[in-house]
Image 1 (cartoon, rainbow, N blue to C red):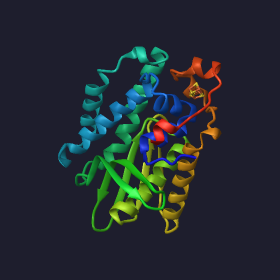
Image 2: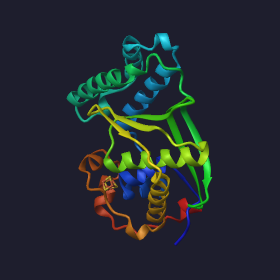
Image 3: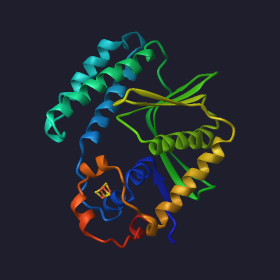
Length: 250
Ligand code: SF4
């Protein structure tokens, strides 16, 4: 079995979404078409980034609306499965972003705002990278936040474990909270770390590393929503693949 040298949060997220899709995209380097979820996530990231860059006194709901209007204006309705979906998505993103980000109005600017960090993790023998979307740091508190379009329980677990491992290994500090807001359902997922979470996080990432390295266990996702927007649907249904992760591993 080959050993991987590096892992990014994007690689891990792709692998969790579907190992087959991960293989097509990253290893076979097949065409990667952008789907509506990626486009909406890009808009959300732009809005969040711009909002937190404003002075505290300017961070209010009208600003959120203006920013959504500015960035959503470039999104084509054609990339959605229907017009209804296009309007439903923008309505939910607007409502839940305003509801969740508004409470941030009077706070100091975050320490990290979409900052990519890299580090070598000795226990995993791998270089790991993670983007901290929003991380607020003060003498008494360290809080990590992420705004996602949506997220499965596995995806939420990934962000939680990555956040803990990075905080402990790179910043030498345990977060007080890790918060992930999923904007299509408006839920705020709050994780409160405990002392055993670093060990759990390393175990989780080690398991993911082994899973990526052992291509004989790659499987197809059962999430039909993913398959509906996957550019490899036809290929995936027709072909029996012999996976070889060597190109990614080298
Ligand atoms: S069609 Fe579905 S199972 Fe096949 S690669 Fe795409 S997401 Fe995975």
